[in-house]
Image (cartoon, rainbow, N blue to C red; front, side, top):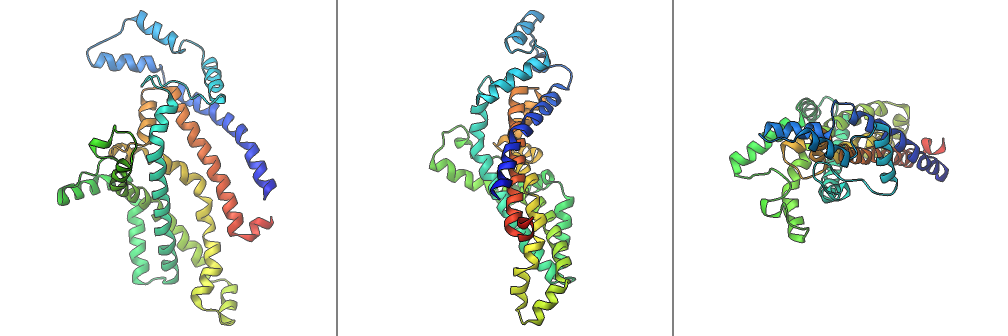
Amino acid sequence: MGKFLAKRLLLIPFLLLIFSIIIFALIQAPPGDFMTTYSAILAGSGSSLDAEQLNAMRVSYGLDQPMHIQYIRWLGKLLHGDMGLSLLYMLPNKQLIGERLGPTILLALFSFILSWLIAIPSGIYSATHKNSFGDYFFMVINYIGVAIPNFFLALLLMWFFYSHYGLNLVGLFSPEFEMAPWSYAKFLDMLKHIWLPAIILALGGSARLTRVMRANLLDELGKPYMITGRAKGMSEWALIMKYPVRLAINPLVSTIGNYIPQLFSGSLIVATVMNLQNIGPLLLQALSMQDMYLSGSILIIYCLLGILGTILSDLLLAWVDPRIRLE
């Protein structure tokens, strides 16, 4: 296991280097640059910058250099732990990301735990009570969860709670706490608001995971070792939990690598609709304004989360399934 983990960890710098090249190339792919977008916004608001001012700002930001030079400078800063300066906010990217890191991690953890708490029990119940009323009920709920876009569900729930209970559940904080420094009162206020976006983000994932859990568990329940276990007098519940559930959960564990970055972004559209103060809307705004250093830094973090999530999936699979551990 130690050798396996060492190999995976040694691959991380190489993978991040490849991802950084792809990310920077994709960010630079649209025509123009940050100054082009910025001047278009100024023109739309009735003000403008002359060509000399634009060129001076482009030189000061390093946007006049070829793409490979810009990439090397950005990569050099990343290697020294410096994510650079946001062209849009004129603040260090590390500060902008750090301010939203706490709510982002908390929301991702809530959503992840909630989705598994919903998916595993409902998947087990549906498989062990095939074609029952409960199975059909969970099946309908799962289809609805997969079919309805998360952002539309967010709009429906926000309208429902506001129209019936007068609750304004937009954002992660009350207005008086949005710009306030972190405190115990601000943390409690966030807990009052975080439950709805956590439920919305968890429902789509749990619907898919429930279907996977049900299908895999049904395959395992009909295998010969189940008949042998029953013949030896094992109780049905102990037999199901000890053997088939451990095997049926493997596909769920293997999805952690893809699931963690998705939760970390808070689903870009949902986060934007609900005005969540996490990293998702920050990335969307940086991409739309072609703020290449801010968007590149966030995307590198997502890639790192994907790599670490995949390693975590492999380790959990080896822990859950002895066959993988032996291989």
